[in-house]
Length: 285
Image 1 (tube, rainbow, N blue to C red):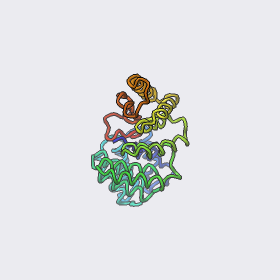
Image 2: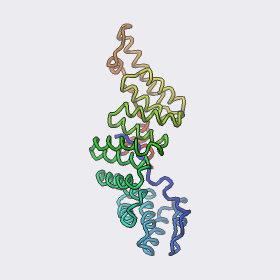
Image 3: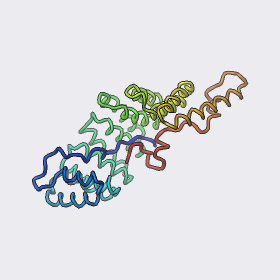
Image 4: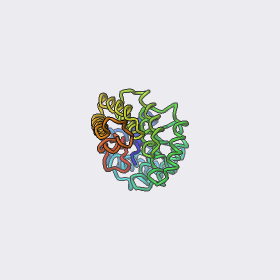
């Protein structure tokens, strides 16, 4: 699976504008450790905070964040995040972070349930929908993953960024819905025509549908905007087309004939950027 999963912690630790807790602990104090990437220090701070204010969802969230994003210990992050959502069940960000923790623990069905809570509380957040679709896919439910992406197009379209549309395109592509993937990549490029990975992955979808001329143009645009895979894919496609043309003796080439001569192309950006990770989650920490 090659979904682009959006990290739950990017910017999530910056709560310095919130009011300080009565005990003297505060998001600002916690952020001091986070900004220094002193994760063991943040664990100690957050543990003291939870001991002083066991009813503070924020304190438990910071403890989970220290373990989850800082120390990469999802087993230790699980209980603090679960406590945070128990104390504040309307907190979409905490549900999202819990979903990632379950993914890291390979508990994909539990991750889907957590991401569903995040979606329910903040349906305008496109990345939560994408994360939910990813969890369904990894749980072996491509039907629910597809339904989620289709609902995402409607529910979060107005607030979606070009990265959100790119991620959506990757979701559709991995589920084999290439035309839907093309539509999503195209929308991403309407918003940011210089985004090389979207041009490359658009080319992959076009090539898989047999639209080789458009694919070649997309690969070249990807290369022009700094995505090295664009050059790789363009060269492979050109080589395959030339070999097929030579074999055909000048006759009209069928898409099947061209496909037979293409061996090394069709590389998506996420496959190269994050090899070996679960789902190759482009964008995850």
